[in-house]
Length: 160
Image 1: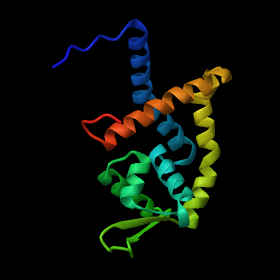
Image 2: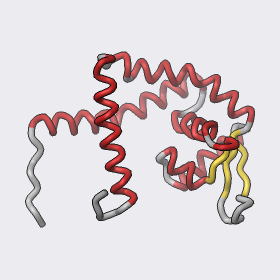
Image 3: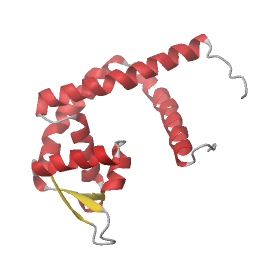
């Protein structure tokens, strides 16, 4: 195995800060959403993705990919949203093997009601603490990093 060069001081600082954000930010956003509107950040992300999909519906596997959740976690989450009347779930009419999740009017209303709480949380936790002139550069760096990680996930063991 080839020798890997250690991180320099700037890289180490960046990496540790990124890991702190990855670990702590979701917990805070989740708590903010539960306190404000009685739904988790994962609930919000799931119904948001459904709201943006054609006919407000998605195959469960595609929904799991869009939300970054495992298939089993997505199934449990959608089943809970079904119980609350925000989503309906049915077998796919295309192949009968997969399931489709569809946002209900009640789910769309919940999303609209939760939108301002979501924005307030994101602003309070992130954008209120970043110089507006730095947002574009940060977005570019994080987008490039995300694209690279996603490409490598699509091609395990290979390079994009």
